[in-house]
Length: 371
Image 1 (cartoon, rainbow, N blue to C red):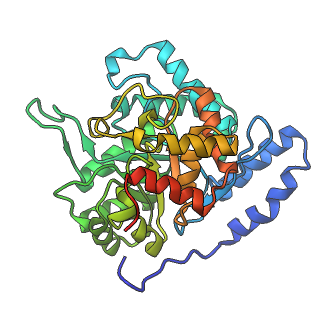
Image 2: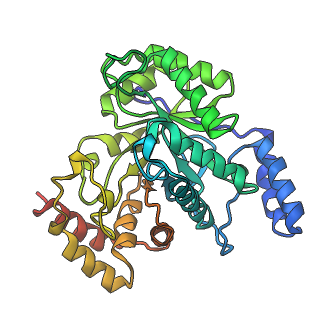
């Protein structure tokens, strides 16, 4: 977005109605609550309060300048198929993925992140089936998914794995995601990884067509350079509301490469994928991405352990709380398929670190004193 430009959201009558009626839901019998929430969802999808099985809602934050409200933590579906190889998916792995999604929903997560590339779309199918399985879930959550990556052999045998932000591909990819998810509208559609041939004007046309058709409500990006975010925002008639990048104590680039600064300036919500460095920071890693194999968490784990012990908390909770402390309101994306780890991560929402604790961890993660 060019300097000085700001996006403002002006509430409609429907949204004001939602705001006035939410409190009344708590006083009604369960079946009336369910029907009322569904009715309110039709006025303003994705804005209903999500209550966990324990009756406690996770605190929510706005996504960018949109009216969408998300839980402080998001649940990432990239592991829910149990494998990246479609041929290895089993009924057991699908059931485990569905249980993980339900565990996240019951723990108060209301933003569910997915992508068409995750196990060739199987992760989207599992999420879609779970939405149908759990009564009222769709009305209480936001569905985010990503497109723009094409696998090798698509559409011809000699086609390489690549990125594709052409309007034709993005529109088709979004439509295919809708079919796999079994929903009418994607709340948040993101570009997955930057296409070196990205044409901002062409992307803007694709976004406008998807929005006009009711196939996607809001848009964002993932793993972009700040300059490309600016180029795309200048071309788009609608605001980009999220930027999803890897951020953790093991991956600090977003603090220094301008990503988080831009998010603050443009009121874009940062989403942090792999906030526990694939488990290296938390309960242990089972699979690392090639880019994560060089991480050295031993630099900061002793300090993280000390802070966790002093707070009577887990390393997982403290590491995620460290991200939540940032004024950009980072939304960590939790990707475990272990229900107990999903619930443990949610505890971070109730833990606030001091500035001194935050900087102790930053200095340890840097491996050197601040300049």
